[in-house]
Image 1 (cartoon, rainbow, N blue to C red):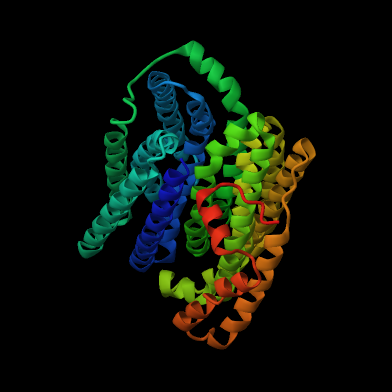
Image 2 (cartoon, rainbow, N blue to C red):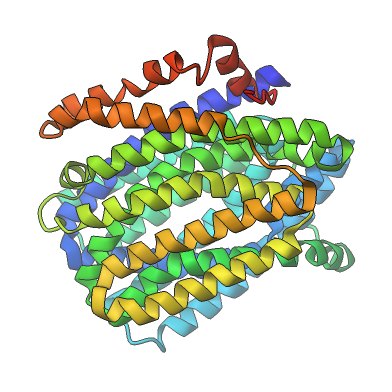
Length: 474
């Protein structure tokens, strides 16, 4: 089991770097081909649909992973997968129809409305891919998901290059993304067949019982998406599309980075769920190990992006997106918080505290919306960025407080303190090279030997981190 987890984590991280590189190239193509205004429209379409597709999740993915981890037979797994897949399929279709009808009421240009209609197919395929991913997570076959991700992203890149060469418009750029996601869904479906044969299965009684458990999680997810994506929609309603484009470039970089902790925490979620009640001491060790691992990587990632935000944006966005640099600098603080927020949110679900966690996300959503409504009219994308940071700080600290209050578990801060010292050293080493992106990046590598000298990790500790055994690093 430990070897399988390590293998899957290694493949997932490696593939994520490949996907991240492809994604950044894709963003570069889109920004240079569409310009700030059309790129703003492009991101608005997907941000708008993301809100509805997240509502359609109903908390089913999280419940699926938790429930299928408890299944004792392959037949039981197949029954769970089929019923939840069918429920997700029906609900995503219903919600997307509502999204399409609603967009024609909103004061958006006809190009955006048509884009939503076309991109709704992307949301359909993406939603089904997500629920099927739970199968691979249970069987520790996430390398197959990684393979499908890479192939679909390459497909998108090729299609976008063709679209640029033929000088096609925004809608066909969106269409290229839809086709790539269709390829993604087909691959995931084919890869899942040897593990579990998913079929259409209607069971209203089972759905009712599942929804009782899932709805608190679903409510939390809705609140999360409100403060995670609604800022783009609010920005689009109160400011020009150019502002949306500027903000979206910085936000895309944030999304590319925070996917890494999401992969890591996703792999240990079954362990957190398994030990949450059966063995609280093992849960504590796993929780501490994850906290230490996130500490090691969160601080240097955030600091690196903060000091090199301007050249990063120039490389990715190109001309016309200069203001995205200061926005990304602000969002680097949110990246730091999101690393730990992933752990807190999953631990709350594993501990069956999702009903209490729901109120945390609700408070975050209310705070986020209210702050954006007040400050976006005056400060535009800077207000959206600072609001994101403030919301993540509020929610992350509140989640860790809840975990400590309910379980008495509070992670030790030894490693994060050493990581902070190593990060300061890294910034000092980088300072003379800030005018040269490549040399500054090479200088950032000084972080790891510094942390090693500070005994932030040893060779044995590194093996523990990779194997997820739960070393407490005392």
